[in-house]
Length: 376
Image 1: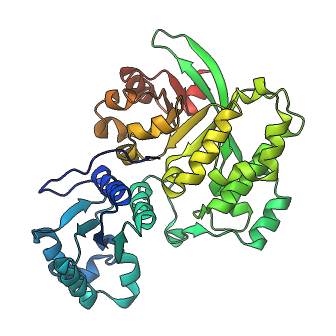
Image 2: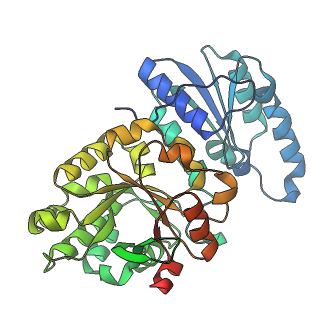
Image 3: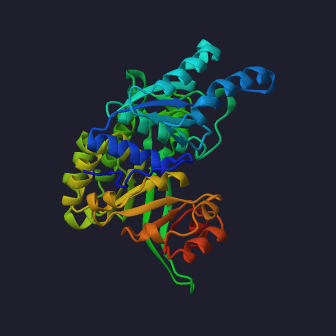
């Protein structure tokens, strides 16, 4: 199984997310040992009042940028990842210098030492966090900026048992739009409005659900589809990897006839594929055998760098659900290389004519978003 299928790239300049992901993949597949230091200065300094502290940190981090035997990778949030073959003396020296000037309260968030291949999952998790950090669906209020990921607890699950999930499901039309004006409704995308749902469950609205809570909610959503909906209209649903073994999901799967299952597109989030590759691929393959079409959900433009041909070999026929953002045209000049991997691309979040026009210029014909609903 190969999710990150690109050869490591050697360069004197700092690499980016794709090169870092390739290094992790190479370390895992080849058993190549690497010492890694993750330095995220944005988590160590804040505000102009700490200018002196910031200057000290910059001086301490300077060896990371100039040591000849380190490979550097830039993160979208301004962080740096340095990797070296053991014993990595330059890495150890830079880490010691940074720890000397870091406030103890900042150290855990700003500086982390990892080893490959043992800590591959942790490093991919940090990379995902850096990629997704600036692309939330809505701004996070300042007092909730550190709300983080909510871990499922009995109180949250009890509240979910009594919650009206249908009141917190966002529904949008997914249509095929042709440049000549022809349009056709394909299905309805139905997924939790997490901010509203988390608030209703007593969790901070800015917090993200953990894997267990996401799977439980998906199971409840599936149970709602199974209840009296054996003639369900075409839908697309998020599919957390662990959802397929929940009671609600199994109830939906057994209640729906094969013809209806073929009308329900199941969307695997790219972050879940990176965090839980084995579980995600097992869930995807089982679902495909049951007749469900599949899609891979990419919420952040930068995460496109983590897609590779190996993913589409593992998930043949899967679509790519790409979230629109104003930065997308500037960051992605052409989707030709991605389309060459095989997936049909579906552009979500289309909220203005420029999004649809850009999609058309890239050969995209499937759209979802507020403007698409208004056009219908």
